[in-house]
Length: 271
Length: 309
Image (tube, rainbow over all chains, first blue to last red; front, top):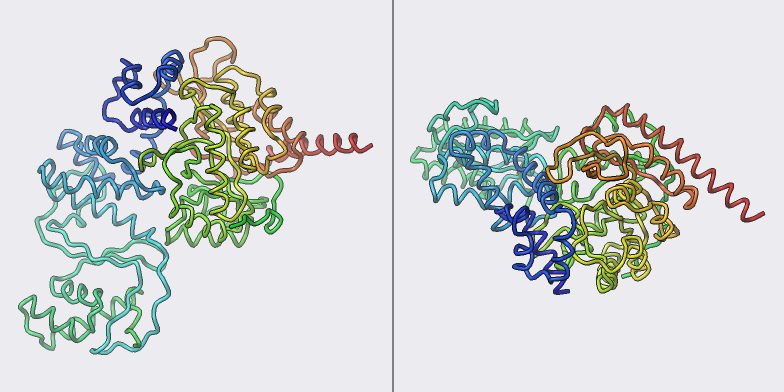
């Protein structure tokens, strides 16, 4: 098996490795440095050079799906920051590579790997990372696994936790990337405005984004964590430095009614 | 854990179609007559939303056959138990009578390559891969069929030809064969061997399903797409790549008919993954292939009648 493992390692390195020059240059050195036996290296070197074709086919699949899911972030990073997105993809494939059986999940693996590096290195503006997250969330919420059956429901009251349709997420951005034009060629910078978005999947399976006020975000964050409605209201107002007034209660009632109409809020937990 | 037998689930015949996002809506709305659909579990496992619901609709209307992409039966990494458990549940949901995947490797050191990489045709690999096929078969609960892949190089020094290797793995694993007729022709043309001799050497009695597809021509070395050369023999500097991006060529249709005359009626699946035409055009190709299928099966029946007479 050692012989076969060396062959697999060499082929995997040919497909995902950062340096493709060896495939056209010192191919024997490339193979033997990965433990390929002399007999196998002889056979490969004597045959037409096709490892480059496999490299193209493999990268076409994994790079293609990643570019498809984050087209605007990729276009902006590549245009303004020396192909930063594509260079990060090359580095991801070289250093880690996909671990998922599902091609659709490769972009999430890539962004989870690349985003901290982009932030730490300051290679691209922070808002571009947020734009990538926004684009990817649009896809991932749309295909998130089928939710389990909700628990028994009761009427909404202050002492009960609320039950929400899944999937649902709260995204927090320092920039209003969700307000950017949709065009791939657009280069408008986003407004530096802290934003909180409720992301959910509607009845037609489309991903929807709802821009929340800071107080609404505080309330919903606690409700989604399982706090009873009354406690969530009190703690959210305390955290926001706002008094719990009749206006706040009325606003919260409108928010919950709106979420009910959108199919996001299902009711209160019965027990 | 014993695999269930094929008899427990419907075994379709005729020419079916691989389900793709590009025409899923239209297909489910128009519900054309097709003997079956084929789906890749990796596209649905762990997924909710529209496509997950669409799969329920497809399953209610058509028999489904499952065809995987990432088991890596030829890999050296351990088989992924979590993946196999999810696959078992998916195959049960789809009620597929068997599950197929490719005789190739697709992962190394935990990395999934998301493509079909060639395995060496050496004696020591026969039992190792066969053991993995048997293990997978036990884990997913239905018979496994392994598919011959298109390849563009042999990794290292070979000890036998592809057909013998396939035959020996199938025998050692006691598994089924998913015969990709296009892949056989592509390899025969790229490497210059006789595809009918190849067919005579693979275990056609183990074939439970066939694949058929189109391909494209590329310049060998620079990989630019080009035209099919006027003559296929000699040094034309071109290589066929199994893109599933074109109509099925005449030679592959003829080969399908010859093979069906030997196997009898097994389901044939048209794969189309790139340059996908409108659904009606695709269904037109399915109808043409069904005529090929009917001629092949008729030849099988008359041959069987002669043998019985």
